[in-house]
Length: 163
Image (cartoon, rainbow, N blue to C red; front, side):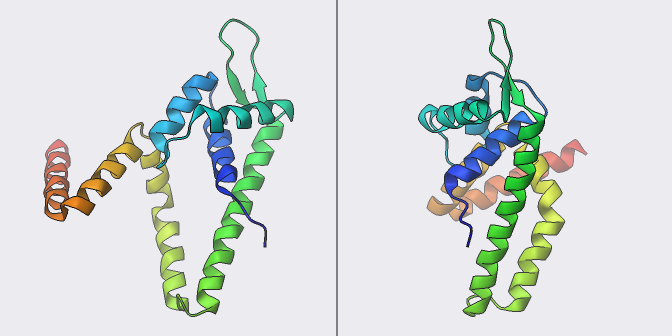
């Protein structure tokens, strides 16, 4: 089985963020801290960026403000890593099904959920601060489920009033 470690997912996040924009390494770190559930440290991000630059997956601009972006080679790597990650998840689901931890209908339900929600989820996670919002709400729900329920109801009311 081809393992995709957490570092691999961090690499995917870096490549994904760089595919359509030029940013400094520090700006990239700030973006990742807003979007990822566990805030990465400079010590985990910068070595990956340097490795990607050395291998030609990331291009750094000349000038005072060193901007980085994805090269064509980097875009190909991103596609490959995404496919490998999808395969990894499918293999994990297959193992759960094999050992009757999840049955076929549960696997189908998970796949249906991801297929239906994928675009919505991706668009939400692109919004700066969304991951922090979800983390805070999750923390509140663990401590006080009624408070979390109340906050969600208030948020829904605000959104409905905006429409």
